[in-house]
Image (cartoon, rainbow, N blue to C red; front, side, top):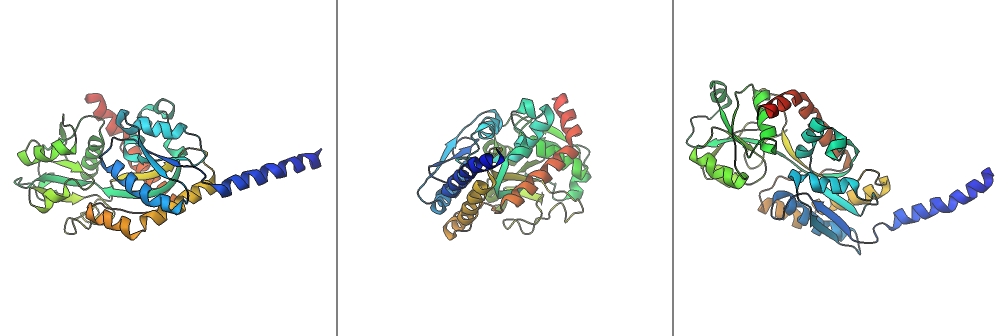
Length: 319
């Protein structure tokens, strides 16, 4: 019986190996959990365009699945068939605190069970003020008994990072909310609607460079190329890194060899000169990494959120 079982298992193993070796045999769907035109959408379309060059015979098809602040698309990815034909660019900074607040079952996903493919970017959050503000340094901020922080609303990513930054730096915090997004918050900051706000990505960069906004400090591991003269929190004696994470993931259970094939194509795409030229032109901050780097980034951020989870829950209760 054992010999018969062994004989039957050999063809099955060979079939599985052949299937893995043939991957991919059809188009790959890339889920973006936000609407077209945003940062996650732009990164996805550019990487997918170059990634398919390294997956001969198939296309990488970007599909926007919006809703629930990015959770709808993320849940759809989590529940997709784990065969390598569905991947997605996740906003880990938005997913982790929600899961920790309500639990994995209610959230509809477990951030630790996604199969990470690669790290696109971990763009640092920057603390911003209007250029006419007297607030220029961390010392100026600490001298104030009241600081108003601009956010879209409770539960938004800017709200989350405002809490983390204020707690890490020991700053007072009073929210001014009701803005539709970064596009509304830039002019609101210039008007002086609030003292501070925090943002990640390229949208604020031109306004800092032309003198309409001031970058007081940044929260990356190193200084951004766009702001080489703006200190990091670490430069100022605060051991905290706060970044928006754009990580490529596959559903739980995706085979390791299939994930490796996707990782290789992903890294080759991000190393292409044409792709790098787009990064420079669009003033993005790419930070390519493979599966290990993506997993480490997600784990590090989870620890940071866990550290401040009581404060986050307390502030949310007061809203």
